[in-house]
Image (cartoon, helix red, strand yellow):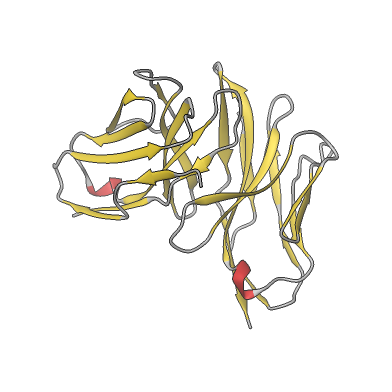
Length: 114
Length: 112
């Protein structure tokens, strides 16, 4: 079936460090891929998305490239800030059973220290 | 600013109680969703609705039901709350033909 696997956390980094959070997916067909972020005490917000192979999504200094050959959508940021501390969810959307649905990974908690 | 509003941020209920979680959206979205979020498990879909009075089971519907009498409101019902339903519950909505979801802030439910 369709699924998303992302690296376990927590990921702990110092401010200005480079961030990578790995995400791989299993899907029949060609899903759209998303990264959502959840700040403490809040719901999920869409961070970035990519709808086809080789697309790069970017927002707030974060980037992720849709790699069909490796079925991956890794999240990267060149220099993290304390305010990036949050839980990050990778997700895919598929048309299944007559509806578009989002399938989420387990989430990766990021903690950034000054 | 468009919004999905969940009526309670925190709830504490007793085992066996009937619990109602309310969600209202102001974006005229057709689709609405209820997820539960548990550490290490991510978000799991409980129920969704693609139109008024319509509902579909998600991946973990057991022990839950839903109601959508108006387009803007989607209620999650725990018929008889149990301790294993202690969780964070997230509501979301989206337009009919997209997966651009807007999430509410969540309701943290504790069943004692």
